[in-house]
Amino acid sequence: MEKKKTHNIRISQDRNISLYLGNPQHRDRILKIGKALSVPARLEILDILKNTPRSLQEISSLLNIPLSSVALHVKVLEEAGLIITENQSGIRGSMRVCLCCFSTFSLTSFNADVDSSDKTVSMEMPIGNYFDCNITPICGIADENGSIGAYDSVNTFYSPLRTRAELIWFSKGFLEYRFPNILNSKLQVEEISFSMEICSEAAGFLENWPSDITISINDVEVATYTSPGDFGARRGKLTPKVWSNGSSQYGLLKSFSVKNDGGYIDGYLQNHEISIADLKLEERHHISLKIAVKDDAVHMGGVNIFGSKFGDYPQGIIMNITYQ
Image (tube, rainbow, N blue to C red; front, top):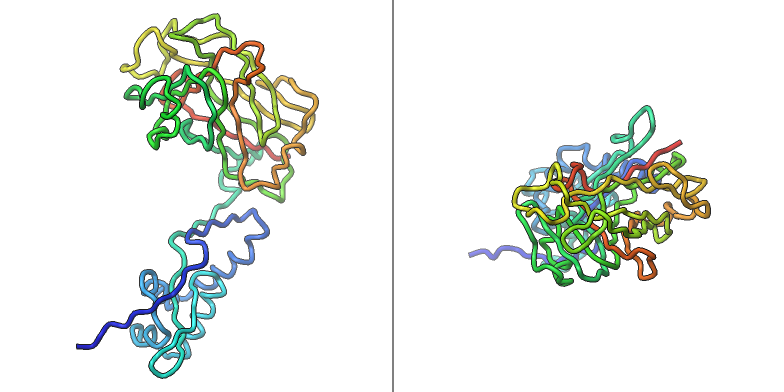
């Protein structure tokens, strides 16, 4: 019985390819991938290589195409970074072995979500998709079905179930969100802003319970908003039925932004000492947003952050980038 041939080949490239039309550094590879995928035979080669390494001779036999044609197709696919090849020893000397080296490929158009009138691109982040945290009880997380994990347990903030969050609260500390940096390098940023539904955090609720909530973008403090209270005298318009009365019900929709002349809250200038240049947006792969109640806050009254299925507003945290 003939043994099935096996090849050992090392995967050394990224398995997930993400390219952006607005990034000039991606243009060359986009063109190479477009060329590589433009021929049906190359798609067939990728298909048979997706799970199994194969030699040029095996590809030629399986697809019934000349070995010389296979070599040309493989060269184009390799230049595009879609396959890798290695020389391995065979029965009659060395042979080239190939394998598809990616799992997913995505191409994003920066202009697809840009409004033609105000040149604004928007992205929404679920409130449970924070990147980092350092918080102090009172704290907790809930979704539309009730509490996630134990109340006042910092451990809950590291649970994989946190991504389902529709309400997050803590007394002190911060949450950090990281939005993908999809800036269009050919356009000049006029304003970057984040909107979210927030309020103070008290035991139960207290309509008069001020809290200083500080917003930072890329570790630059934009402004500090003094929330007037933790609102629970009425039910939130979206607050689920399972959530009991006597607890935080809704917040206020607030917008924090940076323009060239400073940091703003709801369109009103608050911080004259920063500008868009200070954020160094072009230097990072992500855009960081921190929501914090600082150790030195005058009013240390905590914070509630509401998601799209809690409170009064059907949204998570929305980032808007407006170009000139």
